[in-house]
Length: 403
Image (cartoon, rainbow, N blue to C red; front, side):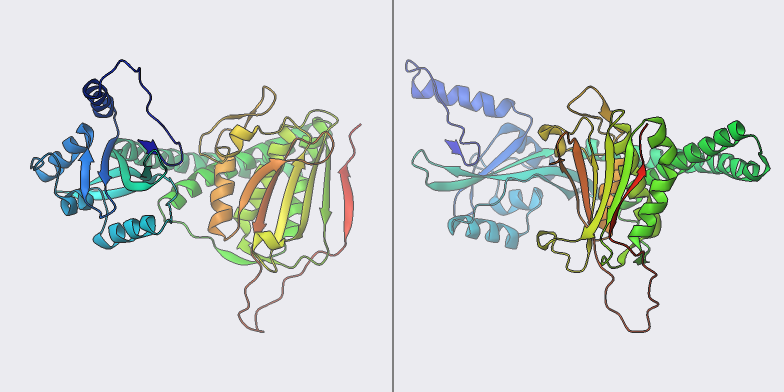
């Protein structure tokens, strides 16, 4: 048997007879934690393993007949509607092989919701001829419920943290005009900046939980992203100066206003620029580039923002998971990128506003990595919409020259 995609072929010692091979193969398949159901090209169940049978028996309260469960009943239990099964089999027979992607679906068991992680693999003969499809699934109800509890607990804790942190920030803000001593003023400014970072982190955690629960939508409006980027860069000048990192911005004057949530866009830029400074060694450079979206972005009239650094970079194996929540990613050096909160927020916030975000290698000499995100343009509503004041100037500005 060959599994399309992995092309796993079973090999065995020549001295083994067919009966022994079958017994051993059966033992292996029944000992896995995943259940599987094999369908032929007519959509009929032809084989299943012990984990699948146990799950189906639990859900139906019945035992298989002639070794297998009724096709319609079995497929329904693992989350397929009849029309979905027909479409799946029809596509396979026409040569349209489905992608081997895992999806979490929910099924109902006597009023209780159970969650299954499910994927499909096309089966082929040794000659490469398609002869069926294997549906692989596992019960992940406990895992999903645990993650839901963690989200609720996180939301509760960070919500309770916001009030005292806000009080600290207000205290720094109140004291700032009263300070004449330069050293004390620096301490106050650092306290404000650090407290603002804590507030941003708290807001990001709350937003992540709301987004995952489908309870948060972006409060979009027309925004001048160039002005927002400049403001955020100015707030990080002290950090870049202390690290002896050059911080620069390059913009295209013809970039039009974007359609986004002001708070989300500010925090996206804050996270990405702060992260770039953090992972760039002394004497390095961080640059922010704002330009028109490219044809491949599929956002006509939108913009593309690139935050580049000359730091440790991100390995190819980490690029696919760097935006996962609470994921600690090691760069090509020994440092780790973030606490797994900021980048996760960035991804979800960009996507909820209709853009995309990814990480790639910095193509410049001594380049580390560059985080790229796109934002959509302002949609056309009417001529009555108030225009947004836009920053002017096509330039490259060295914001901070390291000593």
